[in-house]
Length: 243
Image (spheres, rainbow, N blue to C red):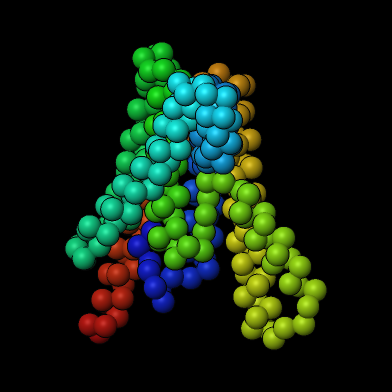
């Protein structure tokens, strides 16, 4: 799911990646909204508010939204920088770095937010940084096939692809199109499911910020499982070659 690259990467790997990370993103989005009334997985709305505050010369309020936008950008930059810096080291899973950092940030926000040790603006910045990390990471690992932190582009792409089903095409093109549509539906569905589960845990179980610990646990378990399964697969391949 994380380690397979290039020709070895399949639709199954991308679907697994989409299910996992869109679920976590949906959870982060609803926790951010319920706890601090801010969207914490994308910056589209923040950019509009930033422009609005600037047009009304409310520079201090505009600066806050600028920091939100910059946090997402910085997260994407750091994620890509780490991956490219350590890509040549074949002994390391470079794609693990952003996931580890994202998990640590979710844990940090859960602890600090739950004890009111950090302001809502800094909570938003940290969560947006984490989602920037995730969006950059998933874009690079899937070769820009999967996006998981916001749905606007996904619904646009899905609408376009659904319209293409009404026009004649080869069997191979049809199969590829249906596979892409299937992937989009998985992302949208699990973003919704992550938000639903996150909201339920946050409100009904009264977890509050600790809901983010669930998201962090999902990421860490998935990372460990992926590394373990990859090692088993590699060992089995080496065993068959040595027979």
